[in-house]
Image (cartoon, rainbow, N blue to C red):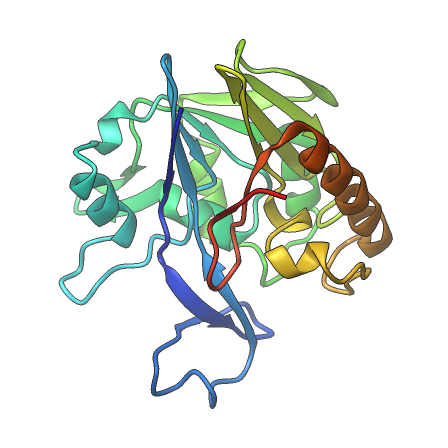
Length: 243
């Protein structure tokens, strides 16, 4: 199993969820919550699995950072077989769609896209919430290759297990990928940064901060016992850690 971090950059997110790329010049002056945006590609014997899709950030030449990293790895977007979405906030889905002269299209055209139906229902009940990009969301859910999920837990394949845990959003889901005695865990925004394992806090930015905190304590124990590789979507410095 190969883990490829697809880091788009470190950003500052404003209260209205506008993202500003952090640089050496603005790091100490720009206001907002500092975080990375870092999807992950997991390559197994059977799949190319994308965990969340980022924001589709482009470099100075107008090319997306994710496509640039994939190109360096000699992987094309067409090779991605599964896109697993933890939840539907804009910084996790906007990189799944692109606009062209002929309208919008899927960035990963051959990937089955796994979406938790109850998470979509929650998003649609919160029109006006700046955490969601409803234009992109409406285009995303119109794609033909959506796999709608409504179970609380189960297997997507022999290697991929999911569980709806809530916390950051009411129906956020997390993923385990297991192959050849190796376990990769993606806790998405319930466990977005390594510091969340050091400081046991209930964050107000979560829908249910106490539940997210309790989940982290549970995962921390199991991760240590079973030697999980933990993927960190929003950590400024780290991508993968082992406890």
